Image (cartoon, rainbow, N blue to C red; front, side, top):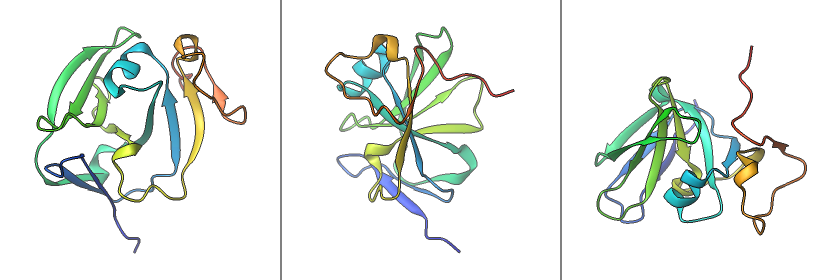
Length: 140
């Protein structure tokens, strides 16, 4: 059995564990993620919601209308402001963890950049990763 991956916010009031593999990072360069993260992009890992359990605290919700027009629920620590995860309102079975909140983010690779049409010109993008001007293509 694998060891759970743990994470939490800056002040430590919110803690969580993930029982699923966290290996692939997707960088979102949309202007909303830039504002929410305070950086050039938000670095995320998509995991099943059922694989995440909160062991301390409860994140606060901000319902955002994303650049795509969809509702994106953004969860953060109400005490220190750390973004913890986001979740599409239409896809509650998946969570988008902010990888900067992981305690030990080893064995992870950036595999995709999305919303590159609004990427900051100074933000480096790995040419080996997929790049999409808007959201990633829907798998059929």
